[in-house]
Amino acid sequence: MATYDFIIVGAGSAGSVLANRLSADPATRVLLLEAGGSNKHMNVDTPAAFSKLFQTKRDWNYFTQPEPDADDRQLYLPRGKMLGGSSSMNAMIYIRGNRVDYDGWAADGCKGWSYEEVLPYFKKSEHNERGADTFHGVDGPLNVADQRSINELSLAFVEAAVERGYPRNRDFNGSDQVGVGPYQVTQKKGARWSTANAYLVPAMSRPNLTIHTDAHAHRIVIERGRAVGVEYRHNKEMKTDRANAEVIVSGGAYNSPHLLMLSGIGPAGHLSEFGVEVAVDNPNVGDHLQDHPVIMNTFHVHKKVSLAHAEKPARLAEYLLFKKGLLSSNVGEAGGFIHTRGGLAGPDIQFHFAPGYFNRHGFEVIDGDAMTVGPTLVAPKSRGHIRLRSPNPDVHPDILTRALSHPDDIRSLVDGLKVTRDIAHSKVFDEYQGGELHPGDDAKTDDELVEYIRRKAELLYHPSGTARMGTDPSSAVVDPKLRVFGVEALRVVDASIMPTVVRGNTNAPTIMIAEKAADLILSD
Image 1 (tube, one colour):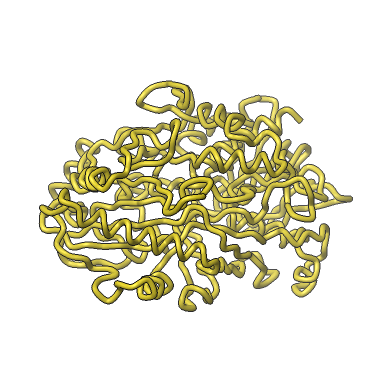
Image 2: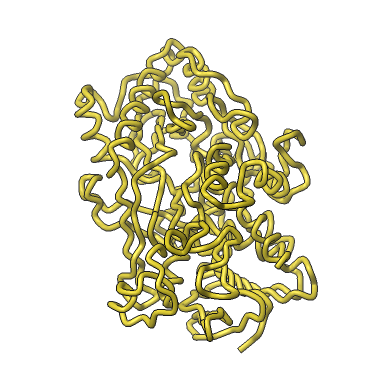
């Protein structure tokens, strides 16, 4: 048994940040536990190859229970299982969310989390290759770049949307999120730049930072109401290490509540069913699960310019030699944010445009060239939950997202699909567009579009809310300093603490949460 000051569970988007910031003081001993292994793999580094990591040993490979509002399908939920976590297998889109998201958190009692208060942490984390300004930093470890070889189809999408009356937006993380344009990405010199690259690698040589991979946390050790250590399996051997200061759970929106429940923190009746001794009865643990549903609108393309040609020998050579070309694509190259109707606090739909065929998470392929537009619901009202399936930590939790259960969610996706169809039929796309593949001619009326959405919608890898932040244990799991209600010296730091999921991709916000949490921890 070894003793540290801090034990961090999970070396993903949040845990990597914490490991770096907390170990910066050479007198502070930090243990970082990661259930997966190394992130060293060509498919991790090569942006366009991210979906090739799905359902491999670098993926937790979660599925939901049959979703009653999504045609009783079991939805696939990829999550990174390696150093860098999901930042090592995501689409690298750098989006922070909308000002109204954070101001909404603050208005609900989460002091310190308004937009103006979290902006410095976004800037602290960031090295934006465009340079510093009111909204962006250049001194942080996370490299943010314009895409090196943006596809002509992606540029055409932007021009087509502008033709249809949507404003051009050069910076979705600036003064206004609304509009269309290319996305900035977390890449450096054409390769992925994960939190493992940005935060862990610079800290690995510190003698006060210990990193264990293949280390699966089984239980937080709680004594007299205080978290004092973690029991985990490391290379097939069970170990327990102690934490003098704090245990920090950064497993993500599925794994963090799962570990809390295995440790006796959660709905008492549910835990008792599985023989788990109850330490804290909190029914909010695992509740309030949110994610962003997306529906794919795909089209044939006349010109041979799509990502269908990315793996040809010439394109592979181009990438290996110059880190440019089709393989440097993050796939979701362009997009934007819109309001589908009046009276909304912020945008409800985000577009993800891919200059290729992307359906069923990349598992489905077709012959020839295509393009895909995915209207994505970014302000969902549907809520799901995480529950235990077994007291065995190796058994995946029971996940039910209840995606598409709220009628407003369906309404926004139907309207978003109508917009993408309209954009695809603009004059700009005349030289490219060769007819709609999905949903096709069988889905014209609103009822037919609803049926298509329920049959084909997927979730866009942004789970949040299952250890939500708030001021009252009757409705939350952690307080605004991310301390778990009812247990001393225990925090949760990851996307699970979001009271509501932000409008946009969640990697940058998760990094911000960890940057702010590091300051909160050190100030205590």
